[in-house]
Image (cartoon, rainbow, N blue to C red; front, side):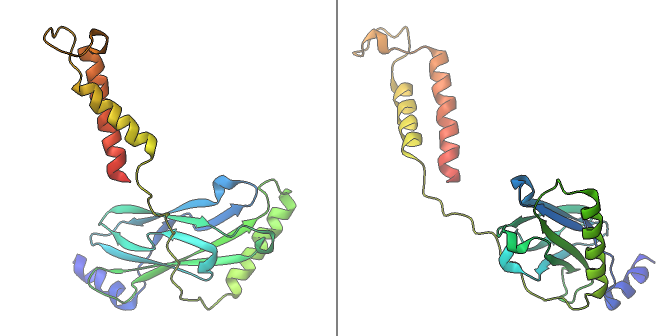
Length: 216
């Protein structure tokens, strides 16, 4: 019975898409709003592929613009505004979130999200109401949607571990090689003998440094 209910949606491409929020507002004077998160939910019993499309891909960076969502799970899509300037204030851009079944290319459903850059969150209430009204009018008049893939965020290339990290690692290794307190037969001066606790601290720091080096 479940297969019979699902089949018309697969054919007609009218699968409901659940995403939150449905509107992104970036404020030029608040840098914390320049990066926002869309959450795509998959309440179905089958996996979904998704693709993020955009009308103005040069203005935004989308981390993981394509991917998959497991059944009854969700995924976060990070969108960053990277062209914040006065010329773009009030301009309405649109994202389209397209979903399809893992084994198919045809879109089963789609959801459009509007994105607007405003100069400040401290606008008068009347101005905000006029802006919301203009956005709604724009949506009702908009029919066509530019099918352009959003460009992924350019992540800086790793330059390797810093000299300070390498130096600390060498110091920790040297500390572990020093004799422990209580060892009598050693040519190393007594003031260089370390306690067990000191060596444990050195081993712990060395482990952290190793993790940092492996990630870079």
